[in-house]
Image (cartoon, rainbow, N blue to C red; front, side, top):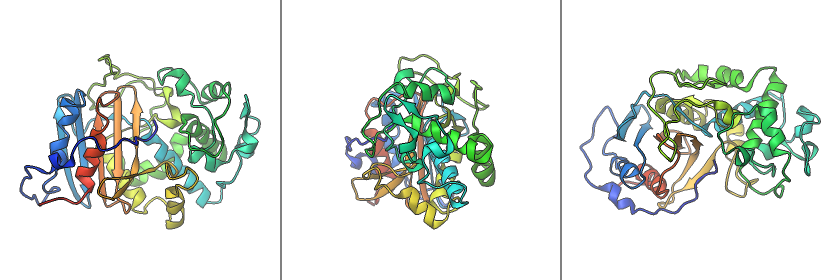
Length: 347
């Protein structure tokens, strides 16, 4: 799902009232707790939850019923940050170059309707500037497909203008194939070996075609109220199949931006938004909040789940929130929640 670029629709001052006393074991006086219930009352979601982390201190809150702190949930495009991290690690190991063409690693695969892998680089896939059509626009994100089936769907459509930011899940499905071609292992295996195991993300997995969620988990609902808890993750593949927990998402983004997964050089590369004209780096996008603070992270949208993770540039402060449905009726609540967490607090 493309990053939100909505304006702050809710005065952030609403989140700065009624601050509780400091707690030595948790983040003190969290103004996010005033905004979170609005996701239920104004955003019309069944339930919402957040987990904030600053250093070793954490704060958890929830609103509505049906979500627990330890629940596993589908994280959608949060998956893209994992995939981009693996690709950048491979670049650091000189096993590929971001300037490599897609053709070099997947010869003859990208052809049709004006698309040509000889003219596309890995960098263009990472930054969503390849122009490749988003296959989920045709499948509505509900039809399970293999990576090659997804690509065939995309290649029946002419590309958008190359070099312009145009968010497309097809880019990251292709990157999953590149990882397998370079390493000889599926992208899930590489992500598990390089990220999930070293960081101890015990609640995070790439389920493949497994449609059930690991225990514990709540229910997930489509926008019409249909229970979509069971879902074939091949609707998204390398662009969005990840299953995880709030704690694991916080740990991952804190570690990534804190320099534990990439060297300073490659982390700078990941945060470079010039190719996408400021809209996107590589598996991460920036959001400048009303107070001037810029946070980095990603969102994830898959049937029955919406997730947003954001972190300070040094990874020390991280917030992840989720809802157990497809969308939030008032998208202005998302930037309000981020501002409540990351903007200076008024005492």
